[in-house]
Image 1 (cartoon, rainbow, N blue to C red):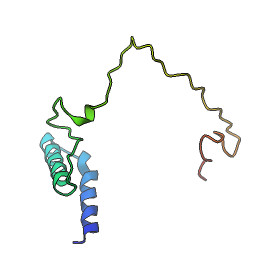
Image 2: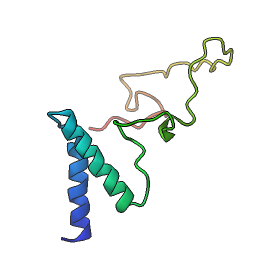
Image 3: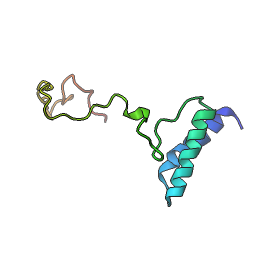
Image 4: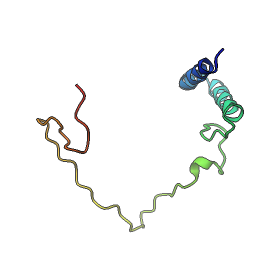
Length: 98
């Protein structure tokens, strides 16, 4: 099998990762993905659902919400919309397709 065909097979397995009947099936799919990342991509798989520990790198850089923090994001007014225009959102977005 060519490498490009094998990558198609691997990506198909990744897309099927949400179709489980049991927890064991989900764990096996995650173990497969972890193995592929470590062996093929030579990198750690950081998006595990099972066996998470407190040192998960996905938690790095996340600051919990602090209601006493007075730093407030400035107000950004809503975008003016003209539904009769060719580009109803002005220069903010492209024109609708079609």
